[in-house]
Length: 108
Image (cartoon, rainbow, N blue to C red; front, top):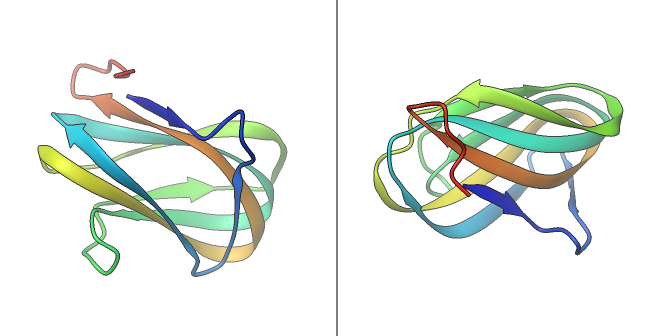
């Protein structure tokens, strides 16, 4: 499942800020990928509730070009909201994310 907010403007995040997206029918999601760019170092902490337990962490780096970063994740099956909290320094642009199923397929 590929989720993008293009052709609209992307969201820009600084440390401790969260972007939330609702709702997705998750089934056997084992990996997540995000496309970012910007002058930032840190990670995204991914949750299914604003104040919920972290389900995965995606390490990010500085990049002037759009770059996709991937990480393993365990998202419970069912209808879920997804929240991405940036932890680190600098500011980054966040344009899209993908949920990858256990077979390695990207659901679109």
